[in-house]
Image (cartoon, rainbow, N blue to C red; front, side, top):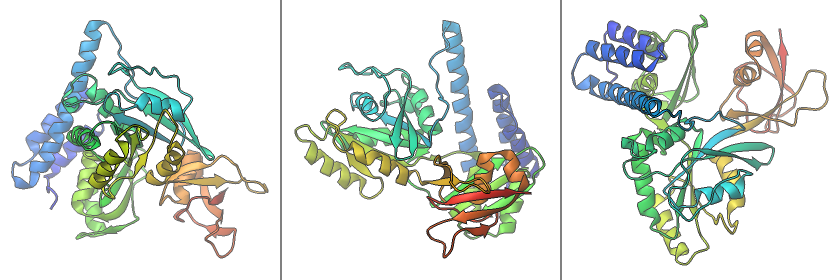
Length: 392
């Protein structure tokens, strides 16, 4: 069951959400914890908030250290470009730099020395009519989640990305490498296992009200209970989307933004070296069907052609094309949306005026009995659809 927090605690958490300054946010979190009754039902909530406080304190300490040293330090978060931002994660010498150089036009430093990459390096990978932004992150190591070396920076990049490519070296024990990487990510509250449900809360502060869209189904709760829970945390102006089979606990966890799921593929590198085939079998037996595994050679180029299509499928995204009213041709540059998105999501992506002044749309799609078909804002789109939006 959810924590059933008292009204004053929920009101305080709303203040936390409205606070952007790290120091003030920590203070509000401390005040929130002081208002939470201490019992078994609230233990998980308190632990989640304490983890967030710990991460914020580390962030402040790191900024203080760099300021004292007279350095601004490398940029942790890179602005997203293309269809999706994908982080290359792995241990040192796994071949991340070689892979980035092979699939993008990025200029990277490839060296025989360990830990050559000390800050994120971006590149653009073309796939059909879209592009992926690939970012090589500094190598992980045991203790990264505790702040060892640049571990928090790398895990921050992973948490901010839309998806991950975990690079393992088939010339070494791949299972040991993957276990270490997943362990550090797990301690940083980053999961590669697809959750039973996903709850997205997009907060607004313009009096739009609370709009809840259930794209899956609610388990052991009603729509009204979800609405009351959200309003109890003062989530009153927001768009909330619920995918899969969601409980009230799932909704409550989304409010606290704790564990994040990242669609992930494994690039098993150096397939061309001796003993690689045997290690690949061990890796696939260990992973099972939990994550897609692609055998590649960044140096020889083997298997790299599978990377784009596997990313596109794993990220659960789709391309939607738009057409101006009275024009014969549609734009060849697609909008990239998550699978399950609606015409409203497309309108929102185009321009804020579109979502506010939306009237109706015409949709061309292979799955429809006839095209175009007139559709409303809640019409669910699929990859390859062409949409013509009409405003009021």
